[in-house]
Length: 481
Image (cartoon, rainbow, N blue to C red; front, side, top):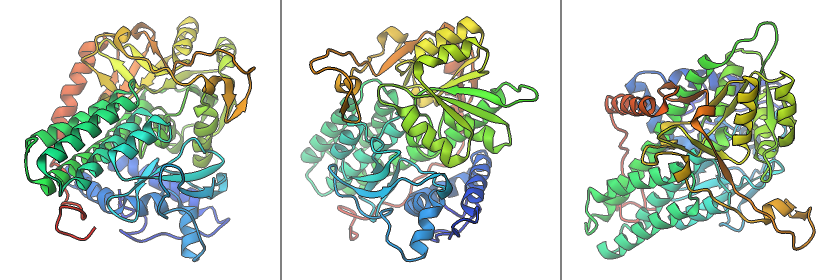
């Protein structure tokens, strides 16, 4: 999205923010309100926004979404934002801003050239912002596997862009070599995180576009341009659909009288996890910027502490009141009537509505059912796997035991302690009050409702002109890289 679309500066311009004036906060709020309206606008406006996303994602992320850093650049002071990364082992580093900075960051952005994606290393937050360079599907698989980028929608977008970058690099190779590169890259990406279905969905979309040329096509430049266009389309659709999801989620929230709406979240579901907007946390942001009085209770989300490290950071930057609690304290507060609704995301939703999400989600759903608290899953249809009949068929990733026995490199259990570390659990459909999607809130029975939502989404996007930007500069395009 261009800064023009957000009601601020035009393409390529960087707004300045005077320190201590409050303008960063106002700008952030203005962006969010305007964006919430833009995603429901006409097809012409939407396609213009997509073109801006292609041209100006770097300036938009670095200036619009990080206005404090823009002020630093405008003053001619050194900054790590926008500088090239130093590969998977390094990257651009700057201390993480405090609440006064007004930062509101996407998890990735394009760098100094069209063949460079810069991905925030979410393992380093909230202490510092480190951007890691991705130039191929191999790099993308590494940042996904190592949890540098996380969150099912963000994983899908980074995977799509990574595969497109590999196609770009292979544009001048022979058809057989290019086939091996693209097919091998796709396999590597799909194996990097097995539970999140958005990853497979995004890779499959790019492969289908590749197959329209044929595996042995000699048109390397055309393939590279087509895969990049498909990746851009995925990013744009994700941004648009998440805005719609937030709008439907906002309408579904309870409205207590005379006090704040008390929302419990688990894991991290904001822009860092989803791209430009967010799912469950996008609903929270929409409520906050619509003037709703909300207070968010944030589960710390052991063992990786996505809630403590990331959700609180995002809420702090956005100015949303919140309280961090231990995971094991949720039942205490729910039983005392101190929570009104639970909002969670999803890494994969089966056809019957069973939902795989961050470990601990199932426990919350049981507590919510026991005490009559609405339990809403907020997820785009790209997280729904209609080929998986129920949750028993969802593969559950088990991660290193070190994530349990250590916290950020500090051992908390005796050497040799055996630990199990499932990254996800499955919440049965009968414990879910509703699934908030970009086509509305789906309630039980979930399978027919989800199928209808897919039909409506397909019809909506079919009625919109497709975003096919010019071929990117670089290898195989006849333009300087």
